[in-house]
Length: 314
Image 1 (tube, rainbow, N blue to C red):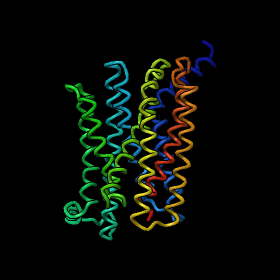
Image 2: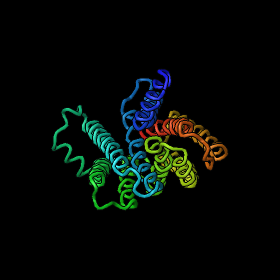
Image 3: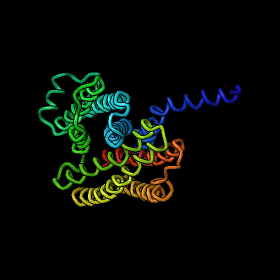
Image 4: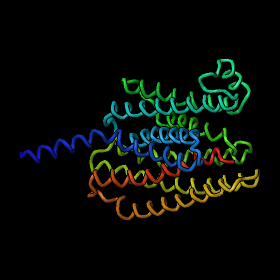
């Protein structure tokens, strides 16, 4: 092998080893950056920080689904190691968000929040109680993943996804729409469907390394994504109607809502094109699949950033 060929081989191996970190990092950074840009001219950090947790939660959901779609027993330690890392990241994001919002309610800095004030928050407020659920669920998932990684007896995907779904809906149930039953139901469906739509693409870039694996997973994902996309669209529209008919909304809210619709239209166009040129094409290289997946979930991450901003916009 020539020197140039050896260098190319080393570079290719380095890129493959970095993909489990780089591709999802694109989603996190895009979501946080878009939330920061859209939050306010002053750059409120709350929405920006809140945008990271949904991406980590989606990654956890995606890892479970992709592992379920893969041949039985394929790389279990690597799969669950990835799951543990993102469940732990989700736990940290949820904990920081809960403490930050609690400090804002009390009117003190996070560093001055006392145990008694945290206890009162958890005992007497909807934010505290659902926020605690949002912290406990990823912690439970971290324990489950650690046990599975060490060769535990096995955890049924339905149980793991159920815990993840409960953790995902905890955050939106502390927002504006939780004030009505209809609003709580539609925003819960919206959040879970968005995670199922985004998560498998994120996880696939970290777990799949061959064209055959991509082809098999994409066939399963395409069916799930179709239902998830329409659930996101329908529940998002209903959530907007409920929000606008039950409380006054600002111009900023309407602008952000319109932007989210525009991003959703782009995603539907991306999905339609993917069905034509990507899904069901086993000759597509793994590198091409990673590039297409990264592009698509980066656009999804922009929607996540907008959603995080909407949740704190009157």
